[in-house]
Length: 147
Image (cartoon, rainbow, N blue to C red; front, side):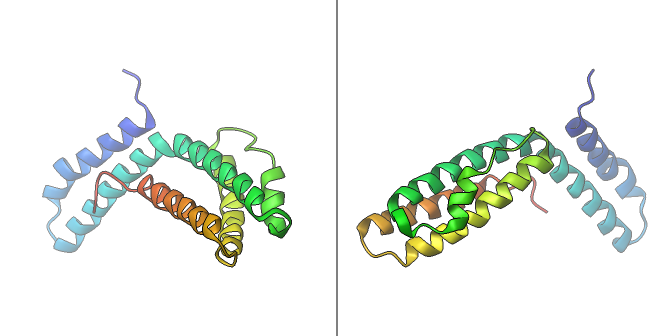
């Protein structure tokens, strides 16, 4: 067996819930153990999906920024142009991917504000594209285990 970090964390959570929790005499202690187990499950899930989620989001946000630049032309915010020109993450390490994501999402906020100030049906349609991505990326962060 190859104990991946996700499996190890899930095993810790199962042991906390099945072995430790029943042995804790106080409601407060039981609550702490339950929270620790849930956090282990959430970290296990995020560990398994984080790189894929961030790579996908970064690609989609870069595409939105490029399309927004085309829509706004000379009125595109400088942060958007800089974000488009920024290199992709140097590695698949979560910290590198998250830094890229933070940079791109900050530029998306600027782009969204500029699009909202832009009249016309094309701008309204583009706003819908931005909202659709924000909704989808939020869904991608939901956990299958809910506290």
